[in-house]
Image 1 (cartoon, rainbow, N blue to C red):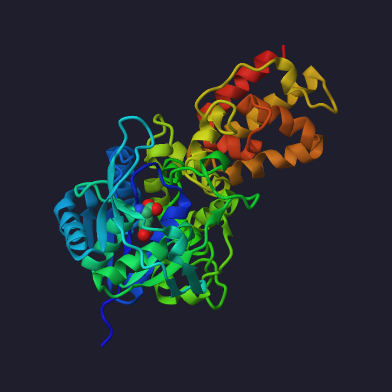
Image 2: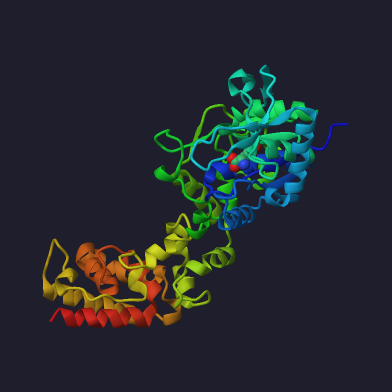
Length: 444
Ligand code: GLU
C-alpha cells in the first residue's frame, strides 16, 4: 500500500505574501486532497528578528479565506526542544561540530554549528523539472545552527519534514538550490528523502519576478476589493497548470479531480489582474440576486441598505457593470457613474443644452413634455421599459438628442451616467419628477 500523501505549506512569516505563495500552497493542498492525504501548515519562524505575528496572522487569515484548510498545524518556535535533540545527536555522532569562527564584526559570533559535508554529488528527480544534480563540494561545511538553541532554516525544515512524515515537498522554485544541502541532512538523519516538486515562479506582466515593486500585493487585498475566493482559487490554479481539456471555469472540486503535477509547466506563469477580474466576473454572474446582494452588502452605500427599492431597481445595472464588488464603491463614489443616485450635484444650466441644438426654449419645452409623459406612469410601474416606451415615441419625433440629452442631464447632472430610462427608473417616479422640475426652472 502506498503511504498516505502528506504535503505542507511552510511559510516564513517575514512579510505579506502575494499570489505566488498562495498558488504554491494551493498546489500542495490540492495534491494532498486528491490523494486523500494530509495538508500541513507549518509556520517557519526560526528567524526571530524578521518573523512577526501580524504576518503569521495574515497568512492564516488568507488561507482560511481561500479555503485552504490545514489538517495539522505547527509553529517552529514551539519546537525548539526537538531541534536541539537532533543537533546534539549530530554533534555526538560527529556529523556536525561546533566550529570556532572569526567574528565578522567586533562582538560578533565566535562559534556556530556546522554540518560535516561529505562533499559529494547529489541528485534528485524533481516532479516538475526532472533530474536535478548538484555538486555539494562548493557548499563546504555549512551552518545548521547558530547555537544549540538557535537552529537555522535548512536543519529545521528537514527535521520537520521528516518528523511530520511529509512525502511530497511542493514549494517555490527559489528553493531548488537549497535541496542539495537538505538532501545531505536527510541522509545524515537516515531519513527517507521526500519527493520534490519545485513550482516555477510567478512573473509580472513584463516577465520580471513578481515582487512588491511591480504589482505584487498581499492576497487579502483581493478580498478588500471584493473578489470571490472561488474565482481567485480558479485563477491561481491555472497559473502554470491547465486541465487536459483546457477548460477555464473550474470549481474547487473539478480542480482537485483534474490536477496533475505532470501538467505544471516549467516556465514561469504571468499574473495578470485583468485576467483575475475576468474570472471574478464569471463567478459573480453565476450568483443568484440574493447571493449577489449578500456578497455586495459591505460595499453598497449605507443609505441604500440591502432591502430598498432603489437596490432592487439598480441591481440589474450593477450586475452588468461590475467585475468585483469593490467596484460598487467607485460607481457610487465621487465622480462615479452612479454618484447621482444619492446626491444631485449642482450643474450649470448650459449642460442641459444638446450640443447640436443649444436652444434653451427647446430644452424647456422637451423637459416639460417629458415631465407630463412621466407623470402618467403609475409609480409602481416606473420601470426602465415603461419609461422608455413612454418617452421614446416623443423623442423619435422631436429628435433623440434634443429630448434625451436634456432629460438625462436633468436626472443625473452628470456628464457620464446610464441612459435616461435607466436613470429615471433608479430614481423612481417622485425623484425623477423633482429633478425635472428643478431643470425646467434652470431653463428660464
Ligand atoms: N519557509 C520557506 C519559505 O517561506 C519555505 C520552505 C519550504 O517550503 O521548504 O520560503
